[in-house]
Image 1: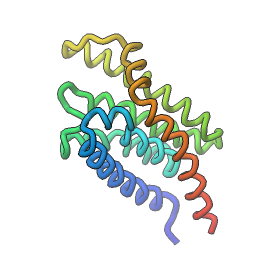
Image 2: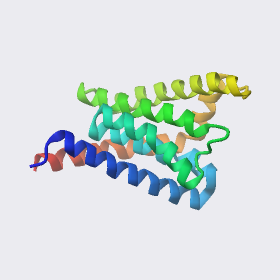
Image 3: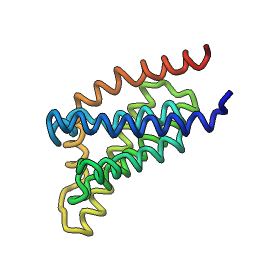
Image 4: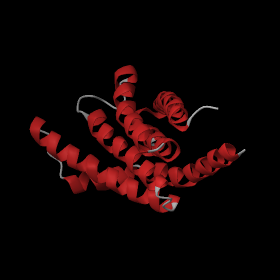
Length: 173
């Protein structure tokens, strides 16, 4: 039988591949707007943390937007949205993984992780943006992110608990 760490790494690779495919499909259908609205990379990072734990979740969360950017051009590297997203998605992955280990209610886990990831994104946007001449206040970035991504957040709250339950049930079998 495969040990838990090896299983987590394998799941991490699968989630990375799923994230790239979802990114390609969503951006092919509706461009950057669909990516912003539905947040396929956000969904994958949150799910990875819940299923694999904090360290694989962190790794997938950081790598996924950067790899998607290099392969597909979305999210863009200039302006460095992919970098801001790497900070945000890494936060999603580590927090959902840590909260899952603490057996925190999945909905509370997602809510705290999504809000914290949004704050990290905004701080990254503010600090890095200031250094390269982008001027947007962090609160504006957070509000824009949540407003545009609301359909994706609803999908995350509907699907991630179901995926978590299914995987936990399958592991017991």
